[in-house]
Image (cartoon, rainbow, N blue to C red; front, top):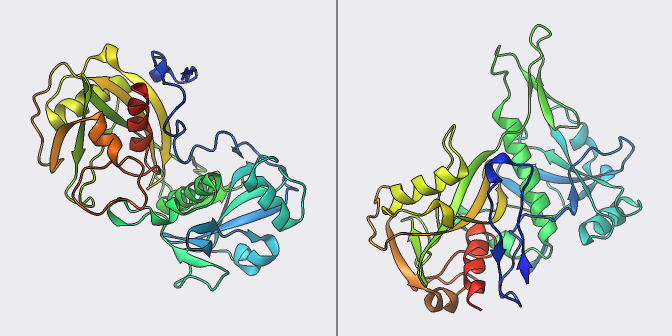
Length: 351
Protein backbone atom coordinates (compact mmCIF):
# COMPACT_ATOMS: atom_id res chain seq x y z
CA UNK A 1 0.00 0.00 0.00
CA UNK A 2 1.22 3.48 -0.78
CA UNK A 3 0.39 6.03 1.87
CA UNK A 4 0.71 9.62 0.65
CA UNK A 5 1.16 12.14 3.43
CA UNK A 6 0.47 15.77 2.56
CA UNK A 7 -0.17 18.87 4.64
CA UNK A 8 -1.03 21.42 2.00
CA UNK A 9 -2.16 24.07 4.43
CA UNK A 10 1.22 24.34 6.13
CA UNK A 11 3.78 26.18 3.99
CA UNK A 12 6.72 24.71 5.87
CA UNK A 13 5.60 21.25 4.78
CA UNK A 14 5.10 22.14 1.11
CA UNK A 15 7.84 19.77 -0.05
CA UNK A 16 6.80 16.70 1.93
CA UNK A 17 7.57 13.54 0.04
CA UNK A 18 5.49 10.43 -0.42
CA UNK A 19 6.33 7.65 2.01
CA UNK A 20 6.13 4.18 0.55
CA UNK A 21 5.19 1.64 3.19
CA UNK A 22 5.25 -2.07 2.55
CA UNK A 23 1.97 -3.98 2.66
CA UNK A 24 0.80 -5.32 4.92
CA UNK A 25 2.16 -2.83 7.51
CA UNK A 26 3.83 -4.26 10.58
CA UNK A 27 3.43 -1.17 12.80
CA UNK A 28 0.86 1.47 13.62
CA UNK A 29 1.02 4.18 10.98
CA UNK A 30 -0.93 6.81 12.94
CA UNK A 31 0.81 8.57 15.80
CA UNK A 32 -0.58 8.21 19.31
CA UNK A 33 -2.80 11.17 20.33
CA UNK A 34 -3.97 11.50 16.70
CA UNK A 35 -7.70 10.87 17.02
CA UNK A 36 -8.10 10.96 13.22
CA UNK A 37 -10.99 13.37 13.55
CA UNK A 38 -12.83 11.49 16.27
CA UNK A 39 -12.41 14.52 18.54
CA UNK A 40 -14.01 17.29 16.48
CA UNK A 41 -12.27 20.46 17.61
CA UNK A 42 -14.62 23.06 16.15
CA UNK A 43 -17.26 25.10 17.99
CA UNK A 44 -20.08 23.23 19.72
CA UNK A 45 -23.66 24.40 20.37
CA UNK A 46 -24.15 26.07 23.74
CA UNK A 47 -27.05 23.69 24.35
CA UNK A 48 -24.82 20.64 24.01
CA UNK A 49 -24.71 18.48 27.17
CA UNK A 50 -21.28 18.32 28.76
CA UNK A 51 -18.97 15.63 30.04
CA UNK A 52 -15.96 16.71 32.06
CA UNK A 53 -12.40 15.38 32.30
CA UNK A 54 -11.10 16.44 35.73
CA UNK A 55 -7.50 17.60 36.18
CA UNK A 56 -5.74 18.52 39.42
CA UNK A 57 -2.31 20.05 38.90
CA UNK A 58 -0.25 17.33 37.16
CA UNK A 59 -2.80 14.58 37.77
CA UNK A 60 -5.71 13.22 35.74
CA UNK A 61 -8.67 11.27 37.08
CA UNK A 62 -8.46 7.65 35.89
CA UNK A 63 -11.03 4.89 36.31
CA UNK A 64 -11.10 1.18 35.56
CA UNK A 65 -9.07 -1.84 36.60
CA UNK A 66 -5.33 -2.32 35.97
CA UNK A 67 -4.87 -3.40 32.37
CA UNK A 68 -8.16 -1.79 31.30
CA UNK A 69 -7.92 1.81 32.41
CA UNK A 70 -10.41 4.45 31.29
CA UNK A 71 -10.47 8.22 31.46
CA UNK A 72 -12.82 9.21 34.27
CA UNK A 73 -15.60 11.38 32.81
CA UNK A 74 -18.10 13.31 34.89
CA UNK A 75 -21.60 14.40 33.93
CA UNK A 76 -22.74 17.93 34.66
CA UNK A 77 -24.56 16.59 37.71
CA UNK A 78 -21.48 14.76 38.98
CA UNK A 79 -19.30 17.82 38.43
CA UNK A 80 -21.84 19.74 40.47
CA UNK A 81 -20.48 22.59 42.54
CA UNK A 82 -16.93 22.02 41.26
CA UNK A 83 -17.81 23.34 37.80
CA UNK A 84 -19.57 26.33 39.36
CA UNK A 85 -16.62 27.16 41.61
CA UNK A 86 -15.16 30.48 40.52
CA UNK A 87 -11.64 29.11 40.85
CA UNK A 88 -12.13 26.16 38.51
CA UNK A 89 -11.13 26.48 34.86
CA UNK A 90 -13.52 25.12 32.25
CA UNK A 91 -12.57 24.70 28.60
CA UNK A 92 -14.21 22.88 25.72
CA UNK A 93 -11.97 20.72 23.50
CA UNK A 94 -14.76 19.76 21.08
CA UNK A 95 -16.99 16.73 20.82
CA UNK A 96 -16.50 13.12 19.84
CA UNK A 97 -17.88 11.69 16.61
CA UNK A 98 -21.13 9.77 16.94
CA UNK A 99 -19.72 6.45 15.70
CA UNK A 100 -16.68 6.39 18.00
CA UNK A 101 -16.49 4.53 21.33
CA UNK A 102 -15.66 7.85 23.00
CA UNK A 103 -18.70 9.54 21.47
CA UNK A 104 -20.97 6.65 22.45
CA UNK A 105 -19.62 6.58 25.99
CA UNK A 106 -20.07 10.34 26.41
CA UNK A 107 -23.64 10.08 25.08
CA UNK A 108 -24.47 7.23 27.43
CA UNK A 109 -23.13 9.16 30.42
CA UNK A 110 -25.24 12.24 29.83
CA UNK A 111 -28.25 10.59 28.21
CA UNK A 112 -27.92 12.26 24.82
CA UNK A 113 -27.63 11.04 21.25
CA UNK A 114 -24.07 10.06 20.18
CA UNK A 115 -22.03 12.94 18.83
CA UNK A 116 -24.00 15.62 20.66
CA UNK A 117 -22.18 15.72 24.01
CA UNK A 118 -19.26 18.14 24.28
CA UNK A 119 -15.96 17.31 25.98
CA UNK A 120 -14.70 19.71 28.65
CA UNK A 121 -11.71 20.29 30.86
CA UNK A 122 -12.54 20.65 34.54
CA UNK A 123 -9.35 22.01 36.09
CA UNK A 124 -9.46 21.88 39.88
CA UNK A 125 -5.85 22.87 40.45
CA UNK A 126 -6.89 25.83 42.60
CA UNK A 127 -7.91 23.38 45.32
CA UNK A 128 -5.16 22.54 47.79
CA UNK A 129 -5.97 18.84 47.74
CA UNK A 130 -7.40 16.75 44.92
CA UNK A 131 -11.14 16.26 45.56
CA UNK A 132 -12.64 12.88 46.31
CA UNK A 133 -14.16 11.86 42.97
CA UNK A 134 -14.88 8.43 41.48
CA UNK A 135 -11.52 7.22 40.18
CA UNK A 136 -7.87 7.61 41.03
CA UNK A 137 -5.70 10.68 40.52
CA UNK A 138 -2.69 9.61 38.45
CA UNK A 139 -0.03 11.22 36.23
CA UNK A 140 -0.55 10.20 32.61
CA UNK A 141 3.15 10.74 32.06
CA UNK A 142 5.70 9.79 34.72
CA UNK A 143 9.29 10.84 35.14
CA UNK A 144 11.96 9.98 32.56
CA UNK A 145 9.34 9.24 29.94
CA UNK A 146 7.24 6.67 31.81
CA UNK A 147 3.79 6.19 30.27
CA UNK A 148 2.23 3.40 32.29
CA UNK A 149 -1.27 4.95 32.36
CA UNK A 150 -1.32 5.77 28.65
CA UNK A 151 -0.07 2.31 27.72
CA UNK A 152 -2.94 0.70 29.66
CA UNK A 153 -5.83 2.80 28.42
CA UNK A 154 -8.46 0.85 26.54
CA UNK A 155 -9.21 3.62 24.02
CA UNK A 156 -6.64 5.70 22.12
CA UNK A 157 -9.15 8.52 21.68
CA UNK A 158 -9.56 8.80 25.44
CA UNK A 159 -5.78 9.23 25.61
CA UNK A 160 -6.04 12.08 23.09
CA UNK A 161 -8.76 13.70 25.20
CA UNK A 162 -6.75 13.31 28.41
CA UNK A 163 -3.68 14.86 26.81
CA UNK A 164 -5.74 17.70 25.34
CA UNK A 165 -7.40 18.71 28.61
CA UNK A 166 -4.11 18.39 30.49
CA UNK A 167 -2.38 20.63 27.97
CA UNK A 168 -5.24 23.11 28.07
CA UNK A 169 -5.06 23.23 31.88
CA UNK A 170 -1.32 23.88 31.80
CA UNK A 171 -1.83 26.69 29.28
CA UNK A 172 -4.56 28.38 31.32
CA UNK A 173 -2.42 28.28 34.45
CA UNK A 174 0.61 29.67 32.59
CA UNK A 175 -0.92 33.07 31.87
CA UNK A 176 -2.88 34.32 34.89
CA UNK A 177 -1.74 37.86 34.04
CA UNK A 178 -1.75 39.86 30.81
CA UNK A 179 1.66 40.02 29.12
CA UNK A 180 0.90 43.56 27.93
CA UNK A 181 -0.36 45.36 31.02
CA UNK A 182 -0.12 42.91 33.93
CA UNK A 183 -3.84 42.79 34.76
CA UNK A 184 -5.57 39.51 35.48
CA UNK A 185 -6.78 37.36 32.59
CA UNK A 186 -9.93 35.26 32.42
CA UNK A 187 -11.17 32.39 30.28
CA UNK A 188 -13.30 33.31 27.27
CA UNK A 189 -14.96 31.62 24.28
CA UNK A 190 -15.68 28.33 26.05
CA UNK A 191 -12.17 28.33 27.53
CA UNK A 192 -10.43 28.39 24.14
CA UNK A 193 -9.00 31.85 24.81
CA UNK A 194 -7.99 34.06 27.69
CA UNK A 195 -8.58 37.79 27.76
CA UNK A 196 -7.18 40.63 29.81
CA UNK A 197 -9.77 41.95 32.29
CA UNK A 198 -8.58 45.53 31.95
CA UNK A 199 -11.04 47.51 29.82
CA UNK A 200 -8.18 49.71 28.68
CA UNK A 201 -6.28 46.70 27.34
CA UNK A 202 -8.51 43.71 26.59
CA UNK A 203 -5.66 41.72 24.96
CA UNK A 204 -6.61 38.21 23.90
CA UNK A 205 -4.45 35.11 24.13
CA UNK A 206 -4.76 31.74 22.43
CA UNK A 207 -2.93 28.49 23.26
CA UNK A 208 0.55 28.34 21.76
CA UNK A 209 2.47 25.31 20.58
CA UNK A 210 6.22 24.84 20.29
CA UNK A 211 7.16 22.94 17.10
CA UNK A 212 9.86 20.31 17.45
CA UNK A 213 11.38 17.98 14.89
CA UNK A 214 12.06 14.31 15.43
CA UNK A 215 14.19 12.41 12.93
CA UNK A 216 15.43 8.88 12.37
CA UNK A 217 18.73 9.23 10.53
CA UNK A 218 19.64 6.25 8.35
CA UNK A 219 22.74 5.21 6.43
CA UNK A 220 22.23 2.22 4.23
CA UNK A 221 20.48 -0.48 6.26
CA UNK A 222 21.28 1.03 9.67
CA UNK A 223 19.68 3.75 11.76
CA UNK A 224 21.21 6.16 14.26
CA UNK A 225 19.67 6.05 17.73
CA UNK A 226 20.68 8.06 20.79
CA UNK A 227 19.87 8.03 24.48
CA UNK A 228 19.73 10.45 27.38
CA UNK A 229 21.18 9.54 30.75
CA UNK A 230 17.83 9.95 32.55
CA UNK A 231 16.07 7.35 30.41
CA UNK A 232 15.42 3.76 31.53
CA UNK A 233 18.22 1.28 30.85
CA UNK A 234 18.46 0.23 27.22
CA UNK A 235 16.10 2.86 25.81
CA UNK A 236 17.37 4.49 22.62
CA UNK A 237 15.37 6.81 20.43
CA UNK A 238 15.41 9.11 17.43
CA UNK A 239 17.10 12.51 17.48
CA UNK A 240 14.93 15.51 18.30
CA UNK A 241 15.00 19.19 19.03
CA UNK A 242 13.02 22.44 19.03
CA UNK A 243 12.62 24.54 15.91
CA UNK A 244 14.41 27.87 16.31
CA UNK A 245 12.68 31.18 15.59
CA UNK A 246 12.73 31.87 11.85
CA UNK A 247 13.87 28.32 11.01
CA UNK A 248 12.13 25.94 8.63
CA UNK A 249 11.47 22.35 9.61
CA UNK A 250 14.00 21.18 7.05
CA UNK A 251 16.66 23.50 8.47
CA UNK A 252 15.89 22.30 11.98
CA UNK A 253 16.37 18.65 10.99
CA UNK A 254 19.76 19.34 9.37
CA UNK A 255 20.94 21.48 12.31
CA UNK A 256 19.83 19.16 15.10
CA UNK A 257 21.45 16.12 13.49
CA UNK A 258 24.69 18.03 12.98
CA UNK A 259 24.69 19.38 16.55
CA UNK A 260 23.79 16.14 18.34
CA UNK A 261 25.78 13.51 16.44
CA UNK A 262 27.94 15.41 13.91
CA UNK A 263 26.26 13.92 10.85
CA UNK A 264 25.28 15.69 7.64
CA UNK A 265 21.91 14.74 6.22
CA UNK A 266 20.79 15.48 2.68
CA UNK A 267 17.81 17.80 2.54
CA UNK A 268 16.52 15.99 -0.54
CA UNK A 269 16.38 12.77 1.51
CA UNK A 270 13.94 14.15 4.13
CA UNK A 271 10.65 12.29 4.25
CA UNK A 272 7.77 13.32 6.46
CA UNK A 273 6.20 10.48 8.48
CA UNK A 274 3.69 11.88 10.99
CA UNK A 275 3.05 14.58 13.55
CA UNK A 276 1.98 14.34 17.17
CA UNK A 277 0.69 16.80 19.74
CA UNK A 278 2.97 16.36 22.72
CA UNK A 279 1.30 18.42 25.42
CA UNK A 280 3.98 17.94 28.07
CA UNK A 281 3.59 20.85 28.15
CA UNK A 282 2.93 22.33 24.68
CA UNK A 283 4.87 20.82 21.78
CA UNK A 284 3.89 19.67 18.32
CA UNK A 285 6.32 16.99 17.15
CA UNK A 286 6.95 16.55 13.43
CA UNK A 287 8.62 13.25 12.51
CA UNK A 288 10.97 12.63 9.58
CA UNK A 289 13.22 10.03 8.03
CA UNK A 290 16.54 11.31 6.64
CA UNK A 291 19.61 9.77 5.01
CA UNK A 292 23.12 10.66 6.21
CA UNK A 293 26.05 11.29 3.89
CA UNK A 294 28.38 9.42 6.22
CA UNK A 295 28.53 7.21 9.30
CA UNK A 296 31.17 8.86 11.55
CA UNK A 297 29.47 9.96 14.77
CA UNK A 298 30.61 12.85 16.97
CA UNK A 299 28.23 12.72 19.92
CA UNK A 300 27.47 15.91 21.85
CA UNK A 301 27.65 14.52 25.39
CA UNK A 302 25.92 17.61 26.75
CA UNK A 303 22.82 16.45 24.85
CA UNK A 304 23.19 12.66 24.70
CA UNK A 305 24.77 10.00 26.87
CA UNK A 306 25.37 7.79 23.84
CA UNK A 307 24.48 7.28 20.19
CA UNK A 308 25.17 4.50 17.70
CA UNK A 309 24.20 2.73 14.50
CA UNK A 310 21.79 -0.23 14.72
CA UNK A 311 20.55 -2.54 11.99
CA UNK A 312 16.91 -3.39 11.39
CA UNK A 313 17.14 -6.81 13.00
CA UNK A 314 18.49 -5.38 16.26
CA UNK A 315 15.81 -2.70 16.45
CA UNK A 316 12.97 -4.98 15.36
CA UNK A 317 13.87 -7.68 17.89
CA UNK A 318 12.30 -5.83 20.83
CA UNK A 319 10.14 -3.35 18.97
CA UNK A 320 6.79 -2.77 20.65
CA UNK A 321 7.37 -4.94 23.72
CA UNK A 322 5.12 -4.10 26.67
CA UNK A 323 5.89 -3.47 29.37
CA UNK A 324 9.01 -1.72 28.20
CA UNK A 325 12.10 -3.88 28.87
CA UNK A 326 14.12 -2.91 31.95
CA UNK A 327 17.43 -4.51 31.05
CA UNK A 328 20.25 -2.87 29.09
CA UNK A 329 19.41 -4.40 25.69
CA UNK A 330 18.63 -1.76 23.06
CA UNK A 331 14.96 -0.94 22.52
CA UNK A 332 12.97 2.07 21.32
CA UNK A 333 10.16 3.79 23.26
CA UNK A 334 6.63 2.38 23.32
CA UNK A 335 3.79 3.16 20.91
CA UNK A 336 2.94 6.29 22.93
CA UNK A 337 5.91 8.12 21.40
CA UNK A 338 6.18 9.53 17.89
CA UNK A 339 9.64 7.92 17.76
CA UNK A 340 7.90 4.55 17.76
CA UNK A 341 5.81 5.53 14.74
CA UNK A 342 8.81 6.87 12.81
CA UNK A 343 10.99 3.85 13.57
CA UNK A 344 8.09 1.56 12.67
CA UNK A 345 7.75 3.26 9.28
CA UNK A 346 11.41 2.57 8.57
CA UNK A 347 11.13 -1.06 9.66
CA UNK A 348 8.09 -1.53 7.44
CA UNK A 349 10.01 -0.40 4.37
CA UNK A 350 12.01 -3.63 4.48
CA UNK A 351 9.02 -5.89 5.21
